[in-house]
Amino acid sequence: MKVDTYLFGELEVSPEKVITFPNGLVAFEEAKRFTLIHEEDEAIPNSFTLQSLDDPALAFQIVDPTDLGFSYELALSDEEKALLQTPASEDVAVMQMLFKKEEDGKTAISPNLRAPLLINIRARVGIQKVMEKMSSKVMLSNLASNV
Image 1 (cartoon, one colour):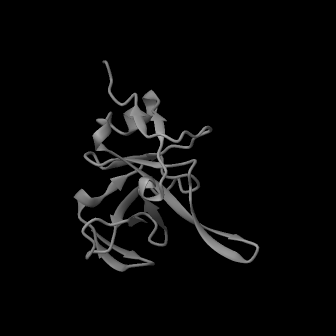
Image 2: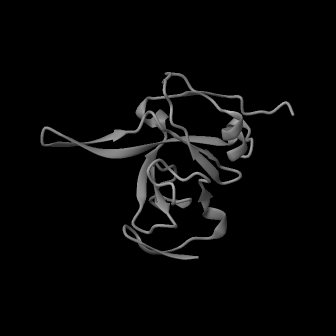
């Protein structure tokens, strides 16, 4: 499929590169299909652009939280596990969205710590997990079902 994006111009996106967020993202619930874009010459990229396929002007910079020295301990609800298609923990990528923050005339880029993205890399489906509490350890629990 061809997508004309604001940042990258026209892109050809193969179906196996589409990541679906069934509930969309916070404040962007209508955008459900995305693809990841990174610098082609980087063997292991440090950051990605999460480009919407539903809204060509919508794109987010995302990073692995461990690259920022941050980690999570996450427990998933039955609904979240179902949306992620009950993945094995090793099939889940946890990513943070970055946002531009202006304060006292200064601009900074900050991660959204309270709402990480969880992406089942095998099924290419994701959710944004909005958290009330935060923890400093990474552990994906409740991913396997006893059913």
